[in-house]
Amino acid sequence: MKKVLKIFLLIISIPVVLFIIFLTYATIADYKPEPTELVYQSEKPDFLNDTIEYNLMIWNIGYCGLDKSMDFFYDGGKAVFSTKENVSQNIENIGNYIKEKSVLIDFFLLQEVDLNSKRSYYNNEQELIQSKIPDYKSFFGKNYESFFVPVPIKKPYAKVLGGLVTYSIYEPSNSTRYSFPGGFAWPKRLFELDRCFLVNRYNLVNGKELLIINTHNSAYDDGTQRKEQMEYMKNYLLDEYKSGNYIIVGGDWNQCPSNFKADFTDYKMDTLERMDISAELLPDWNWVYQNKIPTNRRLQIAFDKKNTLTTVIDFYLTSPNIEVLDVFAEDLEFENTDHQPVFMSIKLINN
Image 1 (cartoon, rainbow, N blue to C red):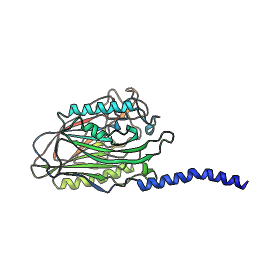
Image 2 (image 1 turned 90 degrees about the horizontal axis):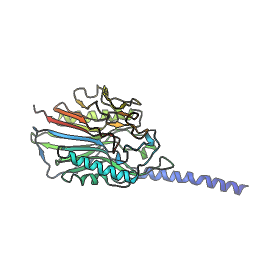
Image 3 (image 1 turned 120 degrees about the horizontal axis):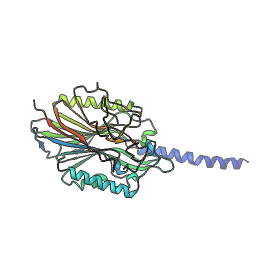
Image 4 (image 1 turned 180 degrees about the vertical axis):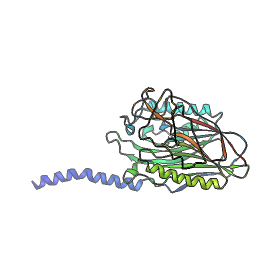
């Protein structure tokens, strides 16, 4: 009887020990970014004209794995991965779209770009997209790295390496990754994103600097992390503005702009767990968005224009010394990703 009990205890202890080993390794191997990390330093930066128009596009490309055919387990759906063929086609279509727009766009700010992940079949999407726009320089800010994400249990997400990419026709003086504060508690944080924003600095002929900031704020939290991140970003932006710089922030904020009111005619507005940025955060700055076309869809079901819940969480923020000339989103009906591209044209205000 004692022998049988020992064997039984041994059998049930093996998975416990393996799980402890797994967590220990994950803790040791966990990506632990510094508060700031220099991504790129130029020896010969460009000097940008301070009187011409500049054009930007922001787009969360959903690692090219969240096309219109997908629902997603994290959003209440069931699917984990798209097919390899779908991912390849999404990469091709997104790359071609960016190539088409590159005639007019100075800065592309992309989020959820994979370099080496199971979910996107280990494609280096940064390089594949840049091959379509070889005249642009690209800058990568890592915000997701895990050797093995263990959920969902039956079909794990596994290896992930991805982040933000800014493509620029101009040579910045430098590009720097800034870590957002906070995050999930251990052990969940081992398998979640390490949120950040990526700052490209450009010299201007008037002696000041233009900052192009690519951001991807938290999702799936109770709102505490997003508020903390916004306070951190506010302090950073105000310090830079006091120095006389011009600042543009664009990306996926995972929250609506302050006091947002949708004017969708063909889509349903998503009000589930909605969070708006406080109007008091930066009252003198410009939240730049459009309200006619949704920029993001919820992934509870595959895309269905009549029933899919949609919202606007992709937009820009500009400092008071920037004049916004135009902003619009293009309705691609979520063909290749769960977000839509948003465009903005600006001029600098010289006092």
